[in-house]
Structures are given as C-alpha cells and as structure tokens.
Length: 170
Image 1 (cartoon, rainbow, N blue to C red):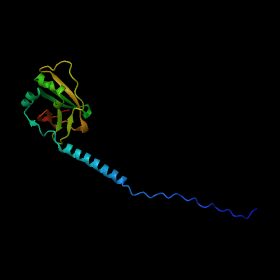
Image 2: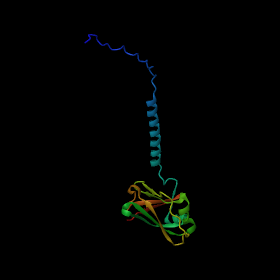
Image 3: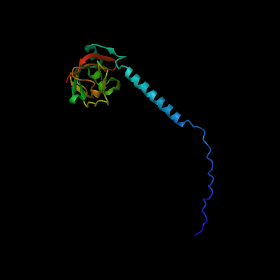
Image 4: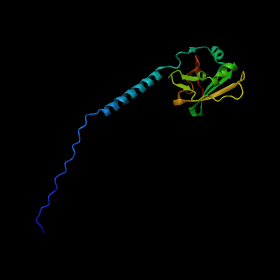
C-alpha cells in the first residue's frame, strides 16, 4: 500500500459570466397587464352605465303599434324561468317584418327595477310566409340571470321607441 495521498486536481476555472444589466421585463409585463385590465374595467363600467333606454322615446301603446307594426300581447316567463316568450300581434305587416330582417329593430326587454336587459342572442328565424295582418307570432329569448320574473315591470325597446310598464307573467 502506498502512502501517497491523492490530491484533487486543481479546480477548472469557470468562465466568468458577465453580469447582466437589470432588465425590467417583469415590470413591463405587470404594466401591460394593468393597462389591459384598466381598459377592460373602463369598458365594463361604460357598458353598465349606458342605459339602453337612453336615446329612445317613450310612447303610448297605440304609438308603439303605429311605429313598429305590432301590439305586444304577452311577455311570458317560461321554461322554469329560463326563457321569455315575446308574443305579438301584427297590425302592420310591412313594419312588423322589420323585426325579422332589421337587426336594429329586434326587441330588447329591460327590467324596470334593476335595469337588467334581455335581448336576442341570435337573429330570429325568418318566416317562410309573410306576416299576416292580425296574425299572432312569438320569439323565445333567453332570460339571462333571471332578469325577468313573474310580475316584473318591463320596458320593450324596438328601434328608437320604447313601451314602458308592461308586466311579465308566468
């Protein structure tokens, strides 16, 4: 046995890594997230602050019928509260057909107490036949967040006119 002692080889010099200058990438990411969040927050506040009833004219039931070509006969809360049946009778087929074909004329329902709105998620189906004078038709609308319940006072907006104080029924 040898009495030689094992010695470790001298350490290999590590190349010196140049120290990077501080790069504020994470600060840039945080600032970008704050700006996007602020922009989305402002948009949400504006959406909630903007009442869809503003810019419309409150009219009587007769004026509403003359302007839209329909008489609203029922706002029915159905399907366990998940749907609203918007039933109407045609008093002017030409004007009433705009409900089917003109995106700006689709009905919007507003719960008068809360301001919650119910509108068409998609365009209503087109009737193969023309709307008939005196005919009764309906749309089904999703009752998002149970905005309307039995007894809720509702404003109906079509285009630039609104009919107030209708009552939803189940």
